Length: 291
Image (tube, rainbow, N blue to C red; front, side):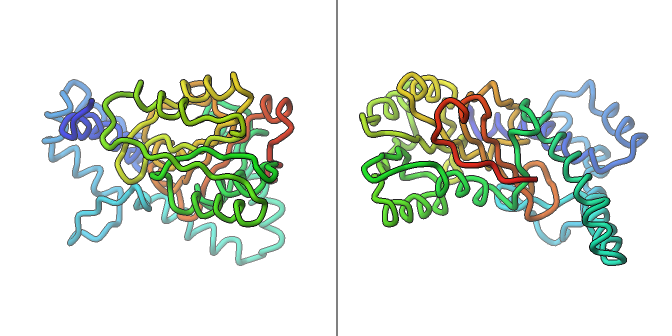
């Protein structure tokens, strides 16, 4: 099990790599070169390097901001781009909406798909992870008596959506308790597998749980589920852009995430992935939103 100390040592380079996107090419090269030969500990103590990172953001210097898991500060260059495009759009709203913004969205969608390792047609740009996942949970074809397996630690908005389906459609929501902390990933896999019933049609699971940081062995869970004809919906709000993951590392049917967390994208941006292959074969998939 990774310790908090080990996590922050490793995260120092990962977080700074995202922040470097806000710098010019020359400053990226200079900042990277300054720590390239250093260990994570040494890089963490390199004040010249972190000064460059600090200048990339406009956060309140009187506060230490540690809630990027909720909403991350965006680099200065991103904030300036949002302001620029907002004013530019207001010069001729309908013209820019259809001639510039719509084509630009497709470029972004293709970039997100490449980052996740899937096809652009399998992704949609939404407002956040909640909208992405609720599109699935409220739209997937379930009838009275069908069961959704999830945990008591999954995000409240997703559990609320399942409760709405229970009241509206008569589905069964099986919320299992996960040991905290869990002894091993094998134990987590076993708890999920043992909780599957003949009525289980969908599994909702967080990649890292937002409450505890507990990771789930998503690919192993998906393998177990798919052998039984069960689909898997993954809450990736705390994994996308923080962890080096691709679609094939998970093999899930649905994946939802926010982009204004670890990717440091503009506020109110998210991504929904719906696997094309499984959606065609299962017949239970919700339709993928346009754009």
